[in-house]
Amino acid sequence: MADTKLSIKDIVFMTGFTPAYIRKLIREGSLIATDEPIEEGSEVKRKMITLESFDAYMAKPRRHARADHRNRYILHANDEEIAVITEAAKANGLNIQLQRAYRKGVRK
Image (spheres, rainbow, N blue to C red):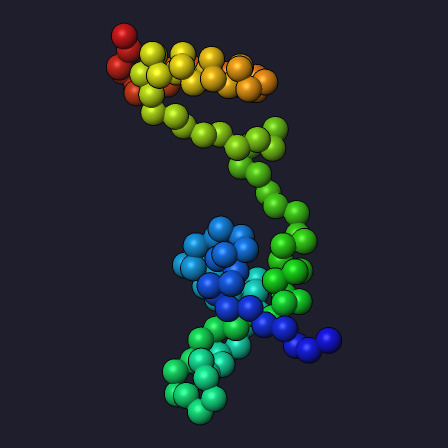
């Protein structure tokens, strides 16, 4: 198999990571990249990541911020909007629990 390489743009498309995050992974050594000319004889170069290092990085287990391995999302909505969202979720078979978040010292 040829030495397949991916551009930062390719990895952004495949993973949804930002280009800045991918460059950070390259700087940290988590992804192995080389500078290659954008076309034959060009002085302009771009980072190309080896497919092997990308596959190895994606195979590593990820550490979750929460102990229960769930992500927490913050929904900015008023009580009426929360009720509409909850009903729509129930109608589609989703059991979600939304609760009103209050800023410190502010309650109604």
